Image (cartoon, rainbow over all chains, first blue to last red; front, side, top):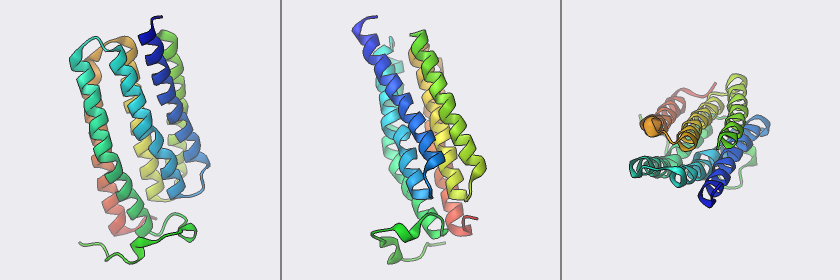
Length: 113
Length: 87
């Protein structure tokens, strides 16, 4: 294998490893917020590593551009989605609220509509 | 490259099984949202690995759509849960 393929394989395998770790975390962590912590690994770094692997192996510039587009969208949308789930979990009373160190949502105004 | 692809698929299958188990076990709706979101990212990773290792870019459009759908779905259900409660 040439160097490009070795680097790409390492990136792909590390990205997939993060997905496995997230699966284990989802099963073993005790409450919503710690499970979210595990679930963000493949959604950001895992996807980025797989995209890097794909770009390294891509023969076509258009394919590489689509992969980069996915990573860019992902980095824009992942924080928003996590914020929404976290707030929904907080307001729905799920998750370990006793373990919070800082609770800024306690002072926030109630949800609109 | 085929070996790498096979190892990747095996790992992703493990991760997907774990996500499905959490999806079934719950216990609350936000837990299920997180599990479903992660499951969709496992699918996205699978498509990306397939495209990268086979050199065939025809499914990359699906990849863009799936990644954006994960965001739209998660946000929608999270808004729903915020209003109706998570049980």
